[in-house]
Length: 330
Image (cartoon, rainbow, N blue to C red):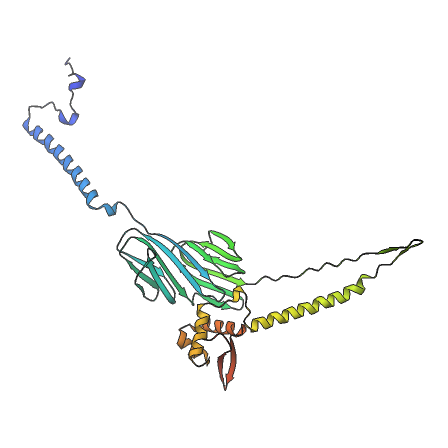
């Protein structure tokens, strides 16, 4: 029996052969080792030459949208750009104003191609993109409908005292802030139907009656309680009168411009008043539209609002309705 060589002196199987003296096998063995080393080198060079293929650098983004009581939509999006140059594409529907700021100070050029805002970024950092549109909502009766696209996940705040009726896709969370519903939505197109119904309060009046007793030194006489109805009717009448007076006072205040927070004027309202002032103190809706570039449907909603608050009045000149400034035009 042939004795095996000591374990410490053994060589790997691909380096040993029973034909050690064969020169061709030695050359083949070295060639195999060389090919293995060449394959490993090529793999390493491929990984180091194309690092972008082995890792991705997605943009971190967070959005927030707000719809006011007039149906106007303002959307904000913050992007954390780590790879430059980059082109941000923000879906927007007929925006009337928009801007982009890099790192909070540097304005960036923005282009609108009819469907999206395009922002070219050449420096890493935080990029804020926002826009205002008057055509994201429509109204039929008391039902409002909003259709727009969230560029990334975020919050959608509806008008105060509104109630969501239909939301698609299903929100991830719903909560309220100062009476306004807030929907936590994913990115992508969304549809929200809602109704606005300001809360009404009914005063509660409590009326109590007592029985009085008169005591004399000699006799004790109990005075019969007066029937409640003798006091109840005048009090109810007084409450009705006071309530009617309060309602009339509130109506007068509204006509004089005493509006609550939900009826406060915004930039679009003031732009309409300024346009009518520039047009001589009175103008048609078409003239105001040409002056302010506000679309027809949102413009009529705002004109009705300004008439209701006492800033404008409607005057018929022949067959043409003219909006005349009463106050607040400058």
